[in-house]
Length: 501
Image (cartoon, rainbow, N blue to C red; front, side, top):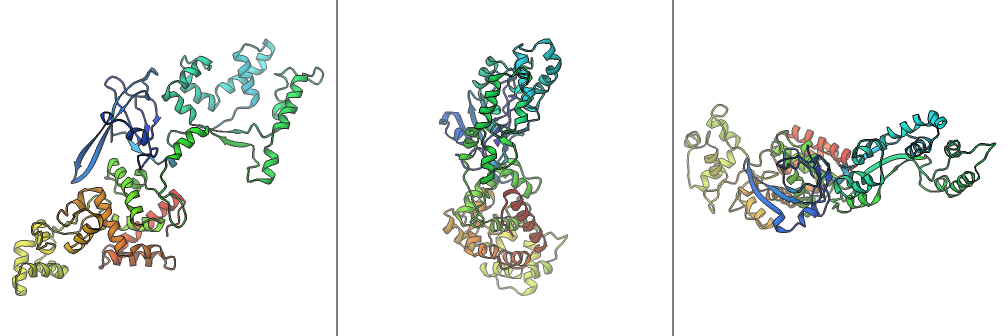
């Protein structure tokens, strides 16, 4: 059986991942939430990071040694190593409330008291006829049903003190109990009929009053403050409210680093789940996770910190990278589609720059023959010819990275700005996630594209057109850029309550 391990998307101090830990004899059957900070704080001998190159992109496999937190199918502790990523592993934002159970209770006070007295064998035969069905309703209610599934080890539909103590001593049992969030009538909301319904079980009638119970009901009424406060404060007048254990919630959320929109203040930190919705279906979970984590840091560093800017740069990036699957421009102009003349007309400036750099003074006829002999159907040859450099003659500076950084001069400026020598090693802009994002973010900031994306005086279509013109002067695939940007903006607003547009 699987264990769902959940820890936080993003920085090491934040809770959320979901995954499976496999033991050679058992699979861990209990869902558990582990803050990333806990894992990152493990000593060196309990964590391993291994580089993995997939499709030319470098990602990492993390191995963690987990002791004392996970249990086997019999409820006993199970220790061992687990790897991230795993086929059943996924990261989550804490705002997804992974691991929490939301239950609306439907059982009354009478049902619960009848169940309690029945378990203590304090109901006489006459009372059993009336109240055992109510006790059964309590036992089968949604809250108890969930508790029994966690705590009731002997499966007798009763919770003993010994069972409760044993469960709370084991993290894999204690955590799901602490993450129960239940909707039920507040004990501070007074309704006389709720307490009067207990009269029979409390041995109280008009003819034979139970003075102690009468006094207790008056005390409860005196202590109940909900209605009074609701009249003057921002408090619901409804009695049915959500109840939760605050300590795990605070611990769950306190590690969340906020990547906040500078305009609306909403937390717009990307998650792997959001990136999977944006990217092509073929994008792997592990890549989506690392991309989202890195983007939150890089975007913030380069001032890409509004709902609109994040939406626009991702919309443009989705076009440039074919759904975040290819961070290197293809230059394979095949003979099936292109003639020498057609290619020359398409990229006249780039091809002529190559001739000039090589010192070739050719007639147009000679140029077309050169294109036919050396450039058509030759990705590497065309790249070095049209996007080469005298400084690094074996490199080509085709479009790479999130926004397809192009030409040597741009690579050199980018290298100076981001501190990574993509001018001498341009492949870094297509294989290293941090450089992929940093190159695009630098270009975005250097060309003041964010000002256009945030300009509220422009309508959406015009803004997308102007942003596109700064990235692709030919407005290539403008229709897709409009569609993708609008889709991502809607997703940002739906997921975060943001202000993209």
